Amino acid sequence: MTTVRNSSAARPAGAVIALITMVIATTVSAHRTDEYLQAARLAVEPHRVELELDLTPGIAVAETIIADIDRDRDGWLSPHEQQAYAARVVSAVELEVDGRPLQVQTAALTFPDLDTVRRGEGTIRLRSAAILPPQSVGAHQLFFRNTHRQDLSVYLANAVAPASDRVAIAAQRRDRDQRELTIDYTVRPGPAAQTRAWLLVSLAAAFTMAGLLTRRSLSQLYR
Image (cartoon, rainbow, N blue to C red; front, side):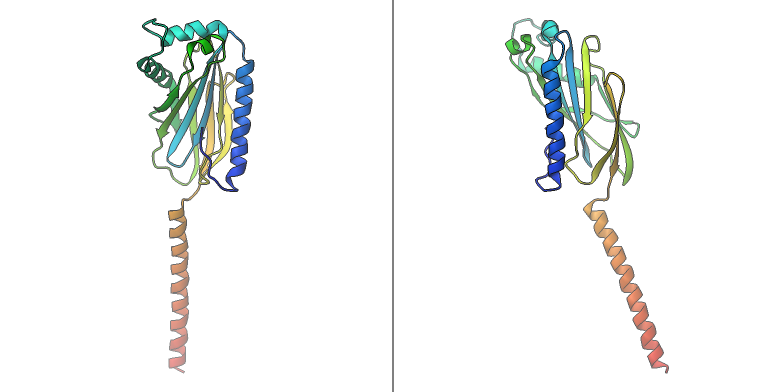
């Protein structure tokens, strides 16, 4: 899960993330047995996008999903099979920022045991990230689409509060099925830019003061 800064400013963001997690957990426990629930959470940071996918098969579709992962049918999900399935899931995800495609890379994955999956209680958790190109200060837009197993899936998609105070979420828009999510966000100036602005203002003030002092000295000289 996205880590929020340990400060008083971060506490509201932590509350938002906790609320989203609670809602998703409640939805997971109540989803229909014949559906594959795919819940996506996206965190936009100044230099990257973090994507969390929680995939929970219902009882009626559990064997279908297991067969999709356990390709050698040995009743065990090997690390290679887990990684291959994670790659297939991520390959079905589209991420764009300001119309430019992003390359999504899986960073971590967790698979439950098969008995838990068969009971409809097992959740596959994938953590991925994409590097953002350099972004100017101002408004930007992130687009997300999940097309994995559309034949038997239901979807959820949400933006979570950014850890950095340089990014502010302005709006979220979803399609009817929540396979697609558009996030409008704003990038604020970083500390370096703020420091440069302060230096420019300070230099301008110094030159203005020097000019005033010079004119005062000249006027006194020619009295």
